[in-house]
Length: 489
Ligand code: CS2
Image: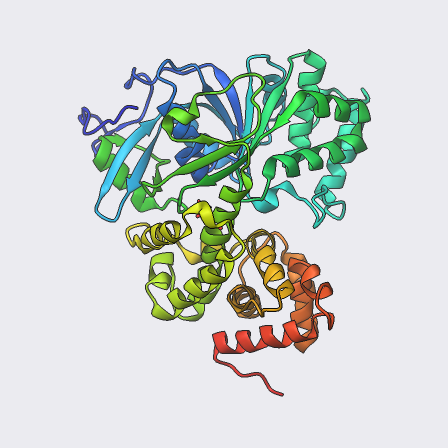
Protein backbone atom coordinates (compact mmCIF):
# COMPACT_ATOMS: atom_id res chain seq x y z
CA UNK A 1 0.00 0.00 0.00
CA UNK A 2 1.25 3.47 -0.73
CA UNK A 3 0.93 6.19 1.83
CA UNK A 4 1.52 9.56 0.26
CA UNK A 5 2.19 12.55 2.43
CA UNK A 6 2.93 16.10 1.44
CA UNK A 7 4.05 15.39 -2.07
CA UNK A 8 4.98 18.38 -4.27
CA UNK A 9 2.37 20.99 -3.47
CA UNK A 10 3.55 23.65 -5.88
CA UNK A 11 0.63 23.74 -8.34
CA UNK A 12 -2.87 25.13 -7.92
CA UNK A 13 -4.64 28.24 -9.05
CA UNK A 14 -4.67 31.50 -7.10
CA UNK A 15 -7.43 31.54 -4.53
CA UNK A 16 -7.57 27.76 -4.39
CA UNK A 17 -5.68 25.57 -2.08
CA UNK A 18 -2.17 25.28 -3.50
CA UNK A 19 -2.30 21.55 -4.12
CA UNK A 20 -2.45 19.41 -7.24
CA UNK A 21 -5.37 17.25 -8.09
CA UNK A 22 -4.92 13.51 -7.70
CA UNK A 23 -3.97 11.95 -11.04
CA UNK A 24 -2.27 8.78 -12.22
CA UNK A 25 0.18 10.82 -14.31
CA UNK A 26 1.43 12.49 -11.14
CA UNK A 27 1.38 9.26 -9.16
CA UNK A 28 3.00 6.58 -11.34
CA UNK A 29 2.89 4.11 -8.45
CA UNK A 30 -0.82 3.75 -9.23
CA UNK A 31 -1.00 2.30 -12.74
CA UNK A 32 -4.45 1.39 -13.98
CA UNK A 33 -5.03 -2.36 -13.49
CA UNK A 34 -7.15 -4.30 -15.98
CA UNK A 35 -10.79 -4.65 -14.91
CA UNK A 36 -11.44 -8.00 -13.25
CA UNK A 37 -14.01 -6.89 -10.69
CA UNK A 38 -17.28 -5.08 -11.37
CA UNK A 39 -18.86 -3.25 -8.47
CA UNK A 40 -22.47 -2.06 -8.24
CA UNK A 41 -23.10 0.76 -5.76
CA UNK A 42 -20.15 3.13 -5.87
CA UNK A 43 -20.31 4.90 -2.51
CA UNK A 44 -18.13 5.74 0.46
CA UNK A 45 -18.44 2.29 2.02
CA UNK A 46 -17.23 0.42 -1.04
CA UNK A 47 -14.28 2.76 -1.35
CA UNK A 48 -13.33 2.36 2.34
CA UNK A 49 -13.84 -1.40 2.32
CA UNK A 50 -13.68 -3.73 -0.70
CA UNK A 51 -11.61 -1.34 -2.86
CA UNK A 52 -9.27 -0.68 0.06
CA UNK A 53 -8.78 -4.44 0.69
CA UNK A 54 -8.17 -5.01 -3.01
CA UNK A 55 -5.43 -2.40 -3.19
CA UNK A 56 -3.70 -3.85 -0.12
CA UNK A 57 -3.36 -7.29 -1.67
CA UNK A 58 -2.69 -6.38 -5.28
CA UNK A 59 0.92 -5.16 -5.52
CA UNK A 60 1.14 -6.20 -9.18
CA UNK A 61 -1.97 -4.30 -10.21
CA UNK A 62 -3.89 -7.25 -11.60
CA UNK A 63 -7.33 -6.59 -10.11
CA UNK A 64 -8.89 -3.38 -11.37
CA UNK A 65 -12.42 -2.48 -10.30
CA UNK A 66 -15.02 -0.92 -12.59
CA UNK A 67 -17.53 0.67 -10.23
CA UNK A 68 -21.07 1.74 -11.17
CA UNK A 69 -22.99 4.28 -9.14
CA UNK A 70 -26.29 3.44 -7.50
CA UNK A 71 -28.24 6.54 -6.55
CA UNK A 72 -25.70 9.27 -7.20
CA UNK A 73 -24.25 9.47 -10.75
CA UNK A 74 -22.21 12.50 -9.66
CA UNK A 75 -19.96 10.18 -7.65
CA UNK A 76 -18.67 8.72 -10.92
CA UNK A 77 -18.09 12.16 -12.45
CA UNK A 78 -16.12 13.33 -9.42
CA UNK A 79 -14.01 10.23 -9.24
CA UNK A 80 -13.38 10.11 -12.96
CA UNK A 81 -12.04 13.68 -12.83
CA UNK A 82 -9.17 12.41 -10.69
CA UNK A 83 -8.45 9.18 -12.57
CA UNK A 84 -10.49 7.30 -9.93
CA UNK A 85 -7.82 7.89 -7.30
CA UNK A 86 -9.08 8.96 -3.88
CA UNK A 87 -7.96 9.31 -0.30
CA UNK A 88 -9.03 7.07 2.56
CA UNK A 89 -8.64 9.00 5.80
CA UNK A 90 -8.49 6.62 8.76
CA UNK A 91 -9.78 8.49 11.77
CA UNK A 92 -8.97 7.07 15.18
CA UNK A 93 -9.79 8.65 18.53
CA UNK A 94 -6.24 10.08 18.53
CA UNK A 95 -5.70 11.34 15.00
CA UNK A 96 -5.92 10.89 11.25
CA UNK A 97 -3.78 9.06 8.73
CA UNK A 98 -4.32 8.76 5.01
CA UNK A 99 -3.72 6.41 2.12
CA UNK A 100 -4.43 6.96 -1.53
CA UNK A 101 -6.36 4.13 -3.15
CA UNK A 102 -6.10 3.32 -6.85
CA UNK A 103 -7.84 -0.04 -7.23
CA UNK A 104 -10.92 1.49 -8.85
CA UNK A 105 -9.94 2.08 -12.45
CA UNK A 106 -13.29 2.95 -14.00
CA UNK A 107 -16.19 4.90 -12.47
CA UNK A 108 -19.49 4.78 -14.34
CA UNK A 109 -23.02 6.00 -14.05
CA UNK A 110 -25.11 2.98 -13.05
CA UNK A 111 -27.37 3.76 -16.00
CA UNK A 112 -24.54 2.84 -18.38
CA UNK A 113 -25.87 -0.68 -18.77
CA UNK A 114 -24.13 -1.15 -22.13
CA UNK A 115 -20.77 -0.96 -20.35
CA UNK A 116 -21.97 -3.38 -17.69
CA UNK A 117 -23.06 -5.71 -20.50
CA UNK A 118 -19.60 -5.60 -22.11
CA UNK A 119 -17.72 -6.07 -18.86
CA UNK A 120 -19.74 -9.09 -17.80
CA UNK A 121 -19.42 -10.58 -21.28
CA UNK A 122 -15.62 -10.50 -20.86
CA UNK A 123 -14.03 -13.72 -19.62
CA UNK A 124 -11.48 -11.69 -17.66
CA UNK A 125 -14.20 -10.34 -15.35
CA UNK A 126 -14.25 -12.71 -12.38
CA UNK A 127 -16.31 -11.04 -9.66
CA UNK A 128 -19.27 -8.72 -9.15
CA UNK A 129 -19.46 -7.10 -5.71
CA UNK A 130 -22.48 -5.11 -4.57
CA UNK A 131 -23.16 -2.42 -1.97
CA UNK A 132 -26.61 -1.19 -2.86
CA UNK A 133 -28.09 -1.00 0.67
CA UNK A 134 -30.54 -3.43 2.22
CA UNK A 135 -33.51 -2.07 0.32
CA UNK A 136 -31.62 -1.72 -2.97
CA UNK A 137 -32.39 -5.34 -3.84
CA UNK A 138 -36.13 -4.52 -3.91
CA UNK A 139 -37.23 -7.77 -2.34
CA UNK A 140 -40.52 -8.56 -0.66
CA UNK A 141 -40.78 -10.11 2.83
CA UNK A 142 -40.26 -13.58 1.29
CA UNK A 143 -37.06 -12.50 -0.45
CA UNK A 144 -38.55 -12.45 -3.96
CA UNK A 145 -38.24 -9.46 -6.31
CA UNK A 146 -41.04 -7.22 -5.09
CA UNK A 147 -43.84 -7.61 -7.63
CA UNK A 148 -45.63 -4.60 -6.17
CA UNK A 149 -42.67 -2.42 -7.16
CA UNK A 150 -43.35 -0.84 -10.59
CA UNK A 151 -39.62 -0.62 -11.37
CA UNK A 152 -39.27 -4.38 -10.89
CA UNK A 153 -42.22 -5.08 -13.18
CA UNK A 154 -40.94 -2.66 -15.80
CA UNK A 155 -37.60 -4.47 -15.83
CA UNK A 156 -39.27 -7.86 -16.19
CA UNK A 157 -41.15 -6.61 -19.26
CA UNK A 158 -38.25 -4.91 -20.95
CA UNK A 159 -35.78 -7.72 -20.22
CA UNK A 160 -38.24 -10.35 -21.49
CA UNK A 161 -38.43 -8.42 -24.72
CA UNK A 162 -34.65 -8.02 -25.02
CA UNK A 163 -33.87 -11.65 -24.07
CA UNK A 164 -36.30 -12.87 -26.73
CA UNK A 165 -34.55 -10.81 -29.38
CA UNK A 166 -37.27 -8.18 -29.61
CA UNK A 167 -34.65 -5.57 -28.76
CA UNK A 168 -30.87 -5.49 -28.75
CA UNK A 169 -29.72 -6.78 -25.34
CA UNK A 170 -26.99 -4.15 -25.09
CA UNK A 171 -29.50 -1.34 -25.68
CA UNK A 172 -31.98 -2.40 -23.01
CA UNK A 173 -32.14 -0.05 -20.03
CA UNK A 174 -33.27 -1.80 -16.87
CA UNK A 175 -33.21 0.44 -13.82
CA UNK A 176 -33.14 -1.96 -10.86
CA UNK A 177 -29.94 -3.48 -9.52
CA UNK A 178 -31.08 -7.07 -10.03
CA UNK A 179 -32.48 -6.23 -13.47
CA UNK A 180 -29.14 -4.78 -14.55
CA UNK A 181 -27.24 -7.70 -13.09
CA UNK A 182 -29.52 -10.14 -14.89
CA UNK A 183 -28.85 -8.37 -18.18
CA UNK A 184 -25.10 -8.61 -17.52
CA UNK A 185 -25.35 -12.31 -16.71
CA UNK A 186 -27.32 -12.96 -19.91
CA UNK A 187 -24.55 -11.16 -21.83
CA UNK A 188 -22.03 -13.47 -20.15
CA UNK A 189 -24.06 -16.56 -20.97
CA UNK A 190 -24.35 -15.56 -24.61
CA UNK A 191 -20.63 -14.78 -24.81
CA UNK A 192 -19.74 -18.15 -23.27
CA UNK A 193 -17.50 -16.29 -20.84
CA UNK A 194 -17.90 -18.89 -18.10
CA UNK A 195 -18.64 -18.85 -14.41
CA UNK A 196 -18.43 -15.80 -12.19
CA UNK A 197 -18.86 -14.91 -8.49
CA UNK A 198 -21.48 -12.47 -7.22
CA UNK A 199 -20.71 -11.04 -3.77
CA UNK A 200 -23.39 -8.96 -2.03
CA UNK A 201 -21.67 -6.79 0.63
CA UNK A 202 -24.69 -5.24 2.33
CA UNK A 203 -26.02 -5.74 5.84
CA UNK A 204 -28.34 -8.59 4.96
CA UNK A 205 -28.33 -12.11 6.37
CA UNK A 206 -26.97 -14.86 4.15
CA UNK A 207 -26.75 -12.40 1.28
CA UNK A 208 -25.36 -14.91 -1.22
CA UNK A 209 -28.28 -17.30 -0.84
CA UNK A 210 -30.81 -14.47 -0.66
CA UNK A 211 -29.61 -12.79 -3.83
CA UNK A 212 -29.29 -16.15 -5.59
CA UNK A 213 -32.91 -17.01 -4.85
CA UNK A 214 -34.05 -13.54 -5.89
CA UNK A 215 -32.00 -13.62 -9.08
CA UNK A 216 -33.29 -17.06 -10.04
CA UNK A 217 -36.87 -15.96 -9.39
CA UNK A 218 -36.37 -12.88 -11.56
CA UNK A 219 -34.58 -14.80 -14.31
CA UNK A 220 -37.27 -17.44 -14.28
CA UNK A 221 -39.88 -14.82 -15.04
CA UNK A 222 -37.77 -13.42 -17.88
CA UNK A 223 -36.27 -16.52 -19.45
CA UNK A 224 -36.07 -19.93 -17.70
CA UNK A 225 -33.06 -21.00 -19.77
CA UNK A 226 -31.07 -18.10 -18.33
CA UNK A 227 -32.22 -19.06 -14.84
CA UNK A 228 -30.85 -22.56 -15.40
CA UNK A 229 -27.52 -21.18 -16.63
CA UNK A 230 -27.27 -18.94 -13.56
CA UNK A 231 -28.06 -21.88 -11.27
CA UNK A 232 -25.24 -23.89 -12.87
CA UNK A 233 -22.57 -21.28 -13.54
CA UNK A 234 -22.88 -18.42 -11.09
CA UNK A 235 -21.52 -18.61 -7.57
CA UNK A 236 -23.25 -16.44 -4.98
CA UNK A 237 -20.92 -15.63 -2.11
CA UNK A 238 -22.17 -14.47 1.29
CA UNK A 239 -20.15 -11.94 3.20
CA UNK A 240 -20.24 -9.98 6.43
CA UNK A 241 -18.71 -6.54 6.07
CA UNK A 242 -17.79 -4.12 8.82
CA UNK A 243 -16.29 -0.66 8.80
CA UNK A 244 -18.03 2.43 10.15
CA UNK A 245 -17.94 4.94 7.31
CA UNK A 246 -20.00 8.10 7.71
CA UNK A 247 -21.22 10.01 4.70
CA UNK A 248 -18.37 12.31 3.56
CA UNK A 249 -18.58 16.04 4.34
CA UNK A 250 -16.95 19.03 2.62
CA UNK A 251 -14.52 19.35 5.57
CA UNK A 252 -13.05 15.96 4.65
CA UNK A 253 -11.57 17.44 1.47
CA UNK A 254 -9.38 19.83 3.44
CA UNK A 255 -8.28 17.02 5.75
CA UNK A 256 -7.32 14.82 2.81
CA UNK A 257 -5.38 17.62 1.13
CA UNK A 258 -3.47 18.37 4.31
CA UNK A 259 -2.57 14.74 4.83
CA UNK A 260 -1.53 13.84 1.29
CA UNK A 261 -0.70 17.13 -0.39
CA UNK A 262 -3.22 16.34 -3.13
CA UNK A 263 -6.60 17.92 -3.76
CA UNK A 264 -9.31 15.27 -3.60
CA UNK A 265 -12.97 16.05 -4.31
CA UNK A 266 -14.00 12.51 -3.22
CA UNK A 267 -12.20 11.50 -0.04
CA UNK A 268 -13.60 8.96 2.38
CA UNK A 269 -13.28 9.13 6.15
CA UNK A 270 -13.52 5.85 8.02
CA UNK A 271 -12.58 4.24 11.31
CA UNK A 272 -9.34 2.24 11.57
CA UNK A 273 -11.28 -0.96 12.41
CA UNK A 274 -12.27 -3.14 9.50
CA UNK A 275 -13.54 -6.68 9.05
CA UNK A 276 -14.62 -8.89 6.16
CA UNK A 277 -15.76 -12.49 6.46
CA UNK A 278 -16.74 -14.40 3.32
CA UNK A 279 -18.20 -17.77 2.49
CA UNK A 280 -18.46 -19.21 -1.00
CA UNK A 281 -16.60 -20.04 -4.20
CA UNK A 282 -14.83 -17.81 -6.70
CA UNK A 283 -14.81 -19.97 -9.84
CA UNK A 284 -12.92 -17.40 -11.93
CA UNK A 285 -10.37 -16.47 -9.25
CA UNK A 286 -10.11 -13.64 -6.73
CA UNK A 287 -7.59 -11.35 -5.08
CA UNK A 288 -5.89 -12.78 -1.96
CA UNK A 289 -8.05 -10.62 0.31
CA UNK A 290 -7.08 -12.84 3.26
CA UNK A 291 -3.59 -11.28 3.08
CA UNK A 292 -5.23 -8.07 4.28
CA UNK A 293 -7.16 -9.79 7.07
CA UNK A 294 -10.33 -10.97 5.30
CA UNK A 295 -11.45 -14.40 6.49
CA UNK A 296 -12.92 -17.19 4.38
CA UNK A 297 -15.12 -19.49 6.43
CA UNK A 298 -17.47 -22.44 5.83
CA UNK A 299 -20.12 -21.14 8.19
CA UNK A 300 -20.68 -17.41 8.01
CA UNK A 301 -23.83 -17.25 10.10
CA UNK A 302 -22.35 -16.79 13.61
CA UNK A 303 -20.08 -13.92 12.50
CA UNK A 304 -22.80 -12.33 10.46
CA UNK A 305 -25.44 -12.57 13.18
CA UNK A 306 -23.04 -11.21 15.79
CA UNK A 307 -22.34 -8.20 13.63
CA UNK A 308 -25.88 -7.55 12.38
CA UNK A 309 -27.52 -7.94 15.75
CA UNK A 310 -24.93 -6.42 18.10
CA UNK A 311 -23.41 -3.65 15.99
CA UNK A 312 -26.16 -2.79 13.55
CA UNK A 313 -28.99 -3.47 16.00
CA UNK A 314 -27.43 -1.10 18.54
CA UNK A 315 -26.88 1.45 15.79
CA UNK A 316 -30.58 1.35 14.95
CA UNK A 317 -31.52 1.68 18.62
CA UNK A 318 -29.31 4.76 18.97
CA UNK A 319 -30.50 6.16 15.62
CA UNK A 320 -34.12 6.33 16.78
CA UNK A 321 -33.78 6.74 20.55
CA UNK A 322 -30.85 9.20 20.38
CA UNK A 323 -32.64 12.07 18.60
CA UNK A 324 -35.54 11.82 21.08
CA UNK A 325 -32.97 12.81 23.69
CA UNK A 326 -31.44 15.54 21.56
CA UNK A 327 -28.45 13.65 20.14
CA UNK A 328 -27.13 13.99 16.62
CA UNK A 329 -24.26 11.49 16.39
CA UNK A 330 -23.59 7.95 17.56
CA UNK A 331 -20.81 9.11 19.91
CA UNK A 332 -23.14 11.64 21.55
CA UNK A 333 -25.95 9.13 21.96
CA UNK A 334 -23.82 6.33 23.34
CA UNK A 335 -22.21 8.81 25.74
CA UNK A 336 -25.65 9.35 27.30
CA UNK A 337 -25.99 6.94 30.27
CA UNK A 338 -29.64 6.32 29.51
CA UNK A 339 -29.04 5.33 25.87
CA UNK A 340 -25.98 3.31 26.82
CA UNK A 341 -28.08 1.43 29.36
CA UNK A 342 -30.62 0.60 26.66
CA UNK A 343 -27.84 -0.63 24.41
CA UNK A 344 -26.46 -2.87 27.18
CA UNK A 345 -29.93 -4.23 27.93
CA UNK A 346 -30.50 -4.95 24.24
CA UNK A 347 -27.10 -6.64 23.99
CA UNK A 348 -27.68 -8.81 27.10
CA UNK A 349 -30.88 -10.01 25.53
CA UNK A 350 -29.33 -10.61 22.10
CA UNK A 351 -26.33 -12.46 23.50
CA UNK A 352 -28.61 -15.27 24.69
CA UNK A 353 -29.30 -16.09 21.07
CA UNK A 354 -25.74 -16.05 19.76
CA UNK A 355 -23.15 -18.83 20.11
CA UNK A 356 -21.28 -18.40 23.39
CA UNK A 357 -17.86 -19.11 21.88
CA UNK A 358 -17.81 -15.94 19.78
CA UNK A 359 -15.94 -13.81 22.32
CA UNK A 360 -19.01 -11.67 22.86
CA UNK A 361 -17.74 -9.81 25.93
CA UNK A 362 -14.64 -8.61 24.11
CA UNK A 363 -16.73 -7.86 21.01
CA UNK A 364 -19.09 -5.65 23.03
CA UNK A 365 -16.22 -3.80 24.70
CA UNK A 366 -14.65 -3.14 21.31
CA UNK A 367 -17.98 -1.97 19.91
CA UNK A 368 -18.42 0.57 22.69
CA UNK A 369 -14.95 1.88 21.99
CA UNK A 370 -15.78 2.23 18.31
CA UNK A 371 -19.10 3.96 19.02
CA UNK A 372 -17.35 6.27 21.51
CA UNK A 373 -14.91 7.56 18.87
CA UNK A 374 -16.24 11.12 18.76
CA UNK A 375 -13.86 12.10 15.98
CA UNK A 376 -15.98 9.93 13.65
CA UNK A 377 -19.04 12.08 13.09
CA UNK A 378 -21.52 9.32 12.40
CA UNK A 379 -24.89 10.98 12.12
CA UNK A 380 -27.88 9.17 13.56
CA UNK A 381 -30.01 10.49 10.73
CA UNK A 382 -27.92 8.52 8.22
CA UNK A 383 -28.42 5.27 10.14
CA UNK A 384 -32.15 5.98 10.64
CA UNK A 385 -32.85 5.64 6.91
CA UNK A 386 -34.64 2.53 5.69
CA UNK A 387 -35.81 1.45 9.12
CA UNK A 388 -38.30 -1.15 7.93
CA UNK A 389 -35.70 -3.23 6.12
CA UNK A 390 -33.01 -2.67 8.70
CA UNK A 391 -35.10 -3.62 11.73
CA UNK A 392 -36.33 -6.72 9.91
CA UNK A 393 -32.73 -7.90 9.54
CA UNK A 394 -31.31 -6.66 12.84
CA UNK A 395 -33.97 -6.99 15.55
CA UNK A 396 -36.73 -9.43 14.63
CA UNK A 397 -34.98 -12.77 15.23
CA UNK A 398 -33.93 -11.82 18.77
CA UNK A 399 -37.39 -10.52 19.59
CA UNK A 400 -39.13 -13.62 18.21
CA UNK A 401 -36.75 -15.88 20.15
CA UNK A 402 -37.28 -13.94 23.37
CA UNK A 403 -41.06 -14.07 23.08
CA UNK A 404 -40.98 -17.75 22.16
CA UNK A 405 -39.05 -18.31 25.40
CA UNK A 406 -41.82 -16.53 27.32
CA UNK A 407 -39.86 -13.33 27.96
CA UNK A 408 -40.96 -9.84 26.87
CA UNK A 409 -37.81 -9.00 24.88
CA UNK A 410 -37.92 -5.45 26.19
CA UNK A 411 -34.46 -4.55 24.89
CA UNK A 412 -35.40 -5.43 21.30
CA UNK A 413 -38.94 -4.16 21.60
CA UNK A 414 -37.52 -0.80 22.63
CA UNK A 415 -35.69 -0.55 19.29
CA UNK A 416 -38.99 -0.98 17.47
CA UNK A 417 -40.67 1.44 19.87
CA UNK A 418 -38.00 4.06 19.14
CA UNK A 419 -38.59 3.58 15.41
CA UNK A 420 -42.36 3.88 15.89
CA UNK A 421 -41.80 7.09 17.86
CA UNK A 422 -39.50 8.39 15.12
CA UNK A 423 -41.87 7.70 12.22
CA UNK A 424 -44.73 9.25 14.18
CA UNK A 425 -42.68 12.33 14.98
CA UNK A 426 -42.23 15.38 12.82
CA UNK A 427 -38.77 14.51 11.56
CA UNK A 428 -39.80 11.20 10.03
CA UNK A 429 -36.77 9.49 8.49
CA UNK A 430 -36.95 9.08 4.73
CA UNK A 431 -37.45 5.47 3.81
CA UNK A 432 -37.63 3.23 0.77
CA UNK A 433 -40.77 1.87 2.44
CA UNK A 434 -42.04 5.45 2.84
CA UNK A 435 -45.34 4.81 1.07
CA UNK A 436 -46.07 1.73 3.18
CA UNK A 437 -45.17 3.61 6.35
CA UNK A 438 -47.44 6.49 5.34
CA UNK A 439 -50.22 3.98 4.73
CA UNK A 440 -49.78 2.52 8.24
CA UNK A 441 -49.78 6.02 9.73
CA UNK A 442 -53.28 6.59 8.38
CA UNK A 443 -54.57 4.33 11.14
CA UNK A 444 -54.92 5.59 14.71
CA UNK A 445 -54.10 4.30 18.17
CA UNK A 446 -53.43 0.60 18.60
CA UNK A 447 -54.30 -0.14 14.97
CA UNK A 448 -51.57 2.18 13.85
CA UNK A 449 -49.02 0.58 16.17
CA UNK A 450 -50.01 -2.88 14.97
CA UNK A 451 -49.82 -1.82 11.31
CA UNK A 452 -46.30 -0.47 11.82
CA UNK A 453 -45.16 -3.66 13.56
CA UNK A 454 -46.73 -5.74 10.80
CA UNK A 455 -44.70 -3.82 8.23
CA UNK A 456 -41.48 -4.88 9.89
CA UNK A 457 -42.55 -8.50 10.16
CA UNK A 458 -46.09 -9.91 10.45
CA UNK A 459 -44.75 -12.85 12.51
CA UNK A 460 -44.20 -10.49 15.42
CA UNK A 461 -47.96 -10.36 15.86
CA UNK A 462 -49.06 -13.62 14.28
CA UNK A 463 -46.83 -15.79 16.46
CA UNK A 464 -48.27 -14.33 19.68
CA UNK A 465 -50.99 -16.28 21.54
CA UNK A 466 -53.29 -13.24 21.57
CA UNK A 467 -52.51 -12.10 18.01
CA UNK A 468 -50.14 -9.49 19.33
CA UNK A 469 -52.44 -7.58 21.64
CA UNK A 470 -50.05 -7.78 24.60
CA UNK A 471 -47.07 -6.96 22.44
CA UNK A 472 -48.81 -3.85 21.13
CA UNK A 473 -49.60 -2.74 24.69
CA UNK A 474 -46.01 -3.27 25.80
CA UNK A 475 -44.70 -1.51 22.74
CA UNK A 476 -46.93 1.50 23.33
CA UNK A 477 -45.69 1.76 26.93
CA UNK A 478 -42.15 1.89 25.62
CA UNK A 479 -43.08 4.53 23.04
CA UNK A 480 -44.62 6.64 25.82
CA UNK A 481 -41.54 6.19 27.97
CA UNK A 482 -39.27 7.24 25.11
CA UNK A 483 -41.28 10.27 24.09
CA UNK A 484 -42.24 11.25 27.64
CA UNK A 485 -45.79 11.64 26.38
CA UNK A 486 -48.24 9.31 28.14
CA UNK A 487 -51.05 8.62 25.71
CA UNK A 488 -54.68 9.33 26.52
CA UNK A 489 -56.54 6.31 27.80
C1 CS2 B 1 -25.13 1.40 9.99
C2 CS2 B 1 -24.10 0.66 9.15
O1 CS2 B 1 -26.16 2.97 8.55
C3 CS2 B 1 -26.30 1.91 9.17
O2 CS2 B 1 -27.35 1.29 9.14
O3 CS2 B 1 -25.59 0.57 11.01
O4 CS2 B 1 -23.81 1.34 7.97
C4 CS2 B 1 -22.80 0.41 9.95
O5 CS2 B 1 -22.13 1.61 10.19
C5 CS2 B 1 -21.88 -0.54 9.22
O6 CS2 B 1 -22.57 -1.73 8.96
C6 CS2 B 1 -20.63 -0.80 10.04
O7 CS2 B 1 -19.92 -1.83 9.48
